[in-house]
Image 1 (cartoon, rainbow over the protein chains, first blue to last red):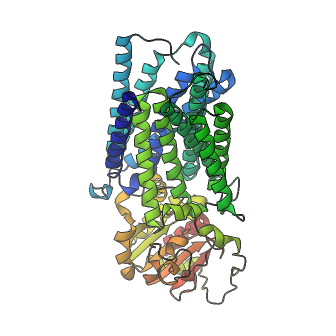
Image 2 (image 1 turned 30 degrees about the vertical axis):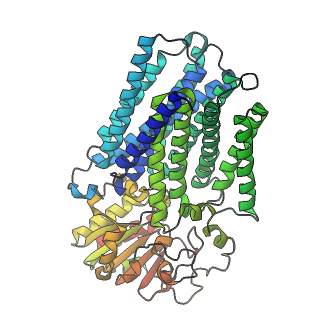
Image 3 (image 1 turned 90 degrees about the horizontal axis):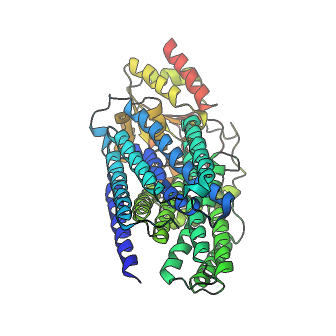
Amino acid sequence: MSAHLLAELTVFVLAVFVGFEVISKVPTTLHTPLMSATNAIHGIVLVGALLVAIVAAPKLGPALSVIVVFLASLNVFGGYVVTQRMLAMFKTRASGPRDGAKR
Amino acid sequence: MPAEITGANQIAIDAAYLVTGIAFILGLRFLSNPKTARLGNTISMAGMALALIATGFQLDFGAAWWILAVGLGGGAAVGIYSARAVKMTAMPQMVALFNGAGGGAAAMVATAEFLRENPGLNPVSWDQSLAVVLSTIIGAISFTGSIVAFLKLQELMTGRPITYPAQQVVNGAIALAIVVAAGMTIANVDAVPAYFVALAAAALLGILFVLPIGGADMPVIISLLNSFTGLAAAMTGFVLGNNVLIISGALVGASGTLLTMLMSKAMNRSIANVLFGAFGKVSTDAGPTQGSGGSGTVREATVDDVATMLAYAKHVVIVPGYGMAVAQAQHSVRELADQLEKKGVEVKYAIHPVAGRMPGHMNVLLAEANVPYPALCDMEDINPEFPRTDVALVIGANDVTNPAARNVPSSPIYGMPILDVDKAHNVVVLKRSMKPGFAGIDNPLYELPNTMMLFGDAKASIDNLIGAVKAL
């Protein structure tokens, strides 16, 4: 195992802990937007898709390169727009007092 | 891989990725309150944009500009259009579809890296191979699994569990084949064919493991698939040596895992039990269900009876379920509640953690109908209130109200925490027919002396109730 891998593993493990910590604070009411938000975040794989597809001679060939970028792009844009739409519904109601949020 | 980048530029790019990671964490942090949630999503989006710009500096547009244009533009156009056009009730399948897209992309990125490393000719370090293989397998399972989940939720195929003999054995054999093929890839024994066998077997397993999952277990499976795609993205990060992928993937993986555990806990079942569990077995032989009126003990109510009962009640608790989503009845439900409140009735909503097809499904639908979120009560808060509730109005919810879960040890859902609607003075169940729920289990609630059934489409029934309540 290289030192490089160990460094990456460290980042991964710490990020998992941060993830658990942050997510456990999200109230039930927002679980659907949460799923949708994290769904959009894993669209970050678009970075990887671009790195392997937008090069001089993509290993996947042109057709599959288009598909990989398409899929990742669908994930990012669709994910964020759906999340925005859901959250907008929660926002329009100023009527809710502070508590209902925490659970 | 990307064109050579000089040291200083690489540092700038990595710094941008770090900012993206922070933006994602803050974005999720702000989701802990409905008031800041929207800001959180905006921060998260800004982080994503920054990562994409930073990535742009590493690309070779000259040769592949059209791939960028068609892929990125097409994905964005389809994604934005469908996200805008989709009805709120179809949200679970939309999320499943986007999730599958991410998983598929992760698997394909790993494949591209695998081909670039050319393991047939060059020895590749085991850890690099392991990351490639994991990213591929998890991504492929998530891709095909999400598509099956989408098909089930969209009702393009049956939402009921699909079971066949020796299902577990078949799945086990495929899982074993994946492990062997992955091992061969990593050990560089016929690496290329072995790799593609692992890829194909994982894609097959993704389909097969979602098939036996019944509609009511969907919240668990959707969360689990979300977590898979997160992990696949993280593994892709290891493959490419890219920290932002590792961080984001780990966050999503953790989130999905946590939600999966919450959902299983809400059903008092282990994740293994949901995946390989008993729900499916029952539905296959659920033939002899009593037809409408077949059992003399079921009391059918008229719209006027129910309207009168509701209007003269003090406390009414509305119990929504997937049936409300199917009938798109959330706006009517809200209007009925408004009418009742005008008559001085106190109306609350009881939300079971696994009501609907994804975590928090009912909350988001009622939010769409402008129901204030403090009126939505969790199971443990509302259950003590049922004994002093005058009318519990069950709208398209079934298994989460089934008292058999409390007192019939032989019931497949025995032990699952339920909403104690049967303890209310009166129970009114809005239901299309006497067909059992997705789990295929009869619900003794319907035969209790304090229960009345109002048959018909949920939205039509509620609209009738609104008219009748107004007329009183």
